[in-house]
Image (cartoon, rainbow, N blue to C red; front, side, top):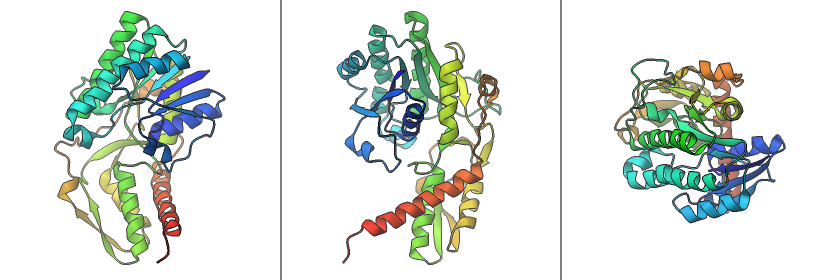
Length: 322
């Protein structure tokens, strides 16, 4: 099967592209900037990389016409909430209008196996009830979440009106060794850096009271595949761990693993304008499709720290001598 993965150069995209290659599929993966291809997370060497800016409708149309994919995994997006606060216009240009441009191209060349939209639990906003099931209203509390809610509405509209098979997987927190910009890896990178200094130090943190449903990317990718194969256009599917972990617990675990004494200090710069206290997913629909996670969260935390320890050691070996 020929698969087009938009945003394949991102964290989840790289794991998904390698997963599809390991299953014997032909993969065309898109990237936005050359820097993304230099990610420290390795990918299968058989992936064909092509440039795609979803803000350019002609580029999207030309790519789809040339590739003629049998399946599309649409992960391409401006995916950072902090950047969305700073530039909501660009976020909507990429995530909402970019999705429309992609679907317009796919209307001309419909993928025979369908399309999976990597939607986001950020669209739910602050939940009224836990766990959050797929029937909960989408009341996002930040520009990124609003853009992802719009993506879903557009996807359902295109599925109904134009006959495209578009299934929606609502991703909750997804992490793993090497991710940039999430709490676990930001803290783990700090810990690894402080360890190299070799003296007692302070670990800077944000809101320790928050809890998050966080899954390992190596569980999330098979879940996405399950939704793609067995999902329907009518029913979005939560893709999460089905339990939440406190930020304080993550920090405490990393401090316990640290090789130097660390004290924890809240940094106001790391606090968000709005922050959900908890967002655990109801994953009964995902389980009914046949997906069950395999990686304990304790393993994910420990391996994230080991990743940044190894990266720090490699950076040290690459540094020029004085």
